[in-house]
Image (cartoon, rainbow over all chains, first blue to last red; front, side, top):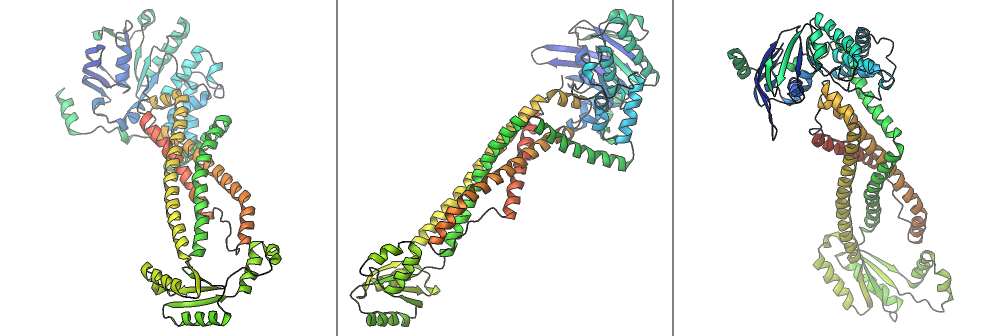
Length: 218
Length: 331
């Protein structure tokens, strides 16, 4: 599903942030990406979401080379990847329903389909009945679950999460991780960047460890 | 690795093929609804920030009304010049001491001239009557013991005599006649007026271009601010796979509304000014021959005004979106 082939990333003036990173995630696999701050975790995720392009090597998503993707194709590639952020990135002036519906509206789904899928997605994260609420009145854990519902509503084959539990207490974090496992069980490929070592250790999943831009364990 | 390289050389990725599910009708409705939603939500945002929207729209409306105001002014002047177009006539003021019989004879002799189309003799009495009815000095004239107005022969040369030298020669002939005190060709000032009109028309075009550019950049700056205010929304939309078209749409509609409302406001400004000026102008016109009427912005001109201002709004926002959205990268 996701393959890194000798990928290096160099920012002008900052040197190599990633050096010869190679790994392969199978379809339906769940993995943690870990490492110290500045090890290149976020950069690696950015390459998959095409926020950045790699300097050398090749990134393959679903068998297609991201290096070759043209700018106008980028939106369509992003629809295959559900993104989850530490700060949730919800629109504060929109209801939970509208936040979750955004990817579907963008993809051009009709009203009925949007309504059906949003409710299904909110049901999965346990927030059915809060469609009309605004993000500000929800707790951190609930807001992150709205973020997750938005990421999966389009049924993408891949989910990327950047420190999804960074702002949550251990109990809520475990809940969120359990949610990811449920998506993995239905065949979604999941890559989670996190430096919460204790949490990661509790879970029996593959760990990719970055150290100064190099993959030291996978 | 080998497999990958082969693929990368051979074919382009097939990303774009997989778009939304659902049936076609549902998707078409979704597309239409999205446009309608963008149209009305941008209007809603404009209303929500009514103070700043109003200021922008008024500034734009003033610029647009300056351009269209000058346009309508020139149109009115053109109408005036148009009325005068036919009069390349020559007025001959007859010397006071020339008798009526001799004047008639002189007029007849001019009539024989093959270059002359028409000759009209205006007697002192006719001149006085005309002057009294049009100038508003009727009572003052009556107070005079003697009619001070000269006999005038109006000579209209044939149209074949268009070229200037021939007209000048004719004029010189008249000037040399013993009966003529003073000969004047009316066309000269018409000609001057026409060249002034040409300058005015060109001036209006230049002014409109300049003000149009102003409108374009004011709109662009307004949209730039809106883009800045809604940065988060744009970034999130980009991250969940929005195309540039999707992101552009609400801003283009904002630009459209700003342009459209500026056009409407400008129309009201111009029409109000014309209404205020209408009465004194018509009074002035009545004091002459009443041939001049104030021209307002017509239906086609109003449509053009609204169309041009809307287009300027859309183009202005497009410029900003084109250049600024590239820089708005998700973090």
